[in-house]
Length: 199
Ligand code: PCA
Image 1 (cartoon, helix red, strand yellow):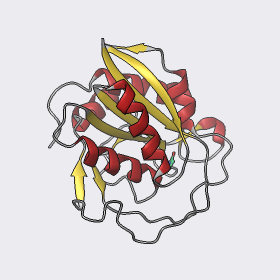
Image 2 (cartoon, rainbow, N blue to C red):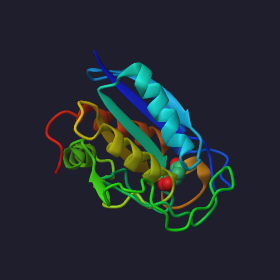
Image 3 (cartoon, rainbow, N blue to C red):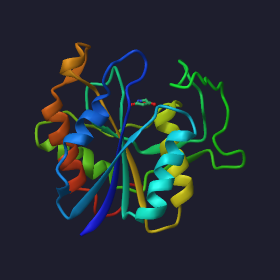
C-alpha cells in the first residue's frame, strides 16, 4: 500500500474542538490504496510544520495531506497554493503573532500544491458535498505548514496538499457542515489524489 501522512489541528481561537482533527481521527486506517498515519498538530507557527517534517522523515510517505479549519467557508476547499508569508490576525496557541514576515527568507513567493486539487474538489462536489478549489490558504499557521512542506518536498516524489474545511455543525457557528459530511468529503478527496497535479 501507499503511505499517507494526514494531519489535523488542535483547537484555536477560542474553540474547544477543531473539526480538522475530529474528522482526521475518525477516518479509517485505510482509504483506497493508502495506509494512513495520523498526526495532531499544534496551532503554532514553525512548530506545526516541524512536527510534520519530523514524522515524515521517519515515515517517508508518498503523500502528505494536512487538514485545517477555515471558519467562514461553506465548502471543502483543497488549496492550490502556499505563499511565503506569516501574518497572524490573532496570536497562535503560544502567543506568537507575526506581522508580514517571510516563512523562508530567500524562499519563492508562492508554491503550487503537488496534488490534483481541481480533480479532488470536483470529485467531492460530484458526490453532493460542497467543494471548490481555494486560491489562498491565508497567512496563518495552515499556510505556514503548507508552504514549508511544499518548499521542503519540491522536486521530490513526496506529494503535498492541504484541505481547509468549514466549521462542523456541533460548533454552532455558520456556515457549517455535519462532521459526517466532512469525513465523506475527505475520503473522496483521498481517493482522487492520484493523477497529474493541477498546475
Ligand atoms: N486553521 C488555521 C490554523 C489551524 C486551523 O485549523 C488556519 O487556517 O491557518
